[in-house]
Length: 169
Ligand SMILES: [Zn+2]
Image (cartoon, rainbow, N blue to C red; front, side):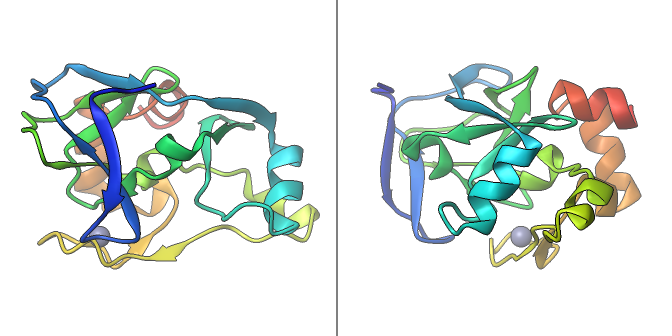
């Protein structure tokens, strides 16, 4: 249970996760919890329509978390107020006040093994973005597709999970 977080209708998309307390920049909000699964398992689950492409959280080159309901309800934003640190820790990127929706940039956790996806006849998940941020990129896509300055911002400030920092940093 996460007493500080509630799920309700979001202005961004569907349901979102909102905080009932203050968070300081850098403060841990929560760990994102889910069952670990291999890339093969992730592909099977998504291709079978059991999950949306946005549901599994990538935490390693070929490792994903099958996120529990609360955590998969956290929306993407191109101008997020939180980020993923380490493997699956969600931390505040800036001060967040009670009532604010918690968001992170999904692209900071996306570096799918394309060759393996193609082998399995699967496709790379992307999504149109309507997050409403001034700097909205209009699409949620792999980390490598982010503008160079945005990649640099996330990498230099360590605002991405370890496997991304290792690969691109
Ligand atoms: Zn956006």
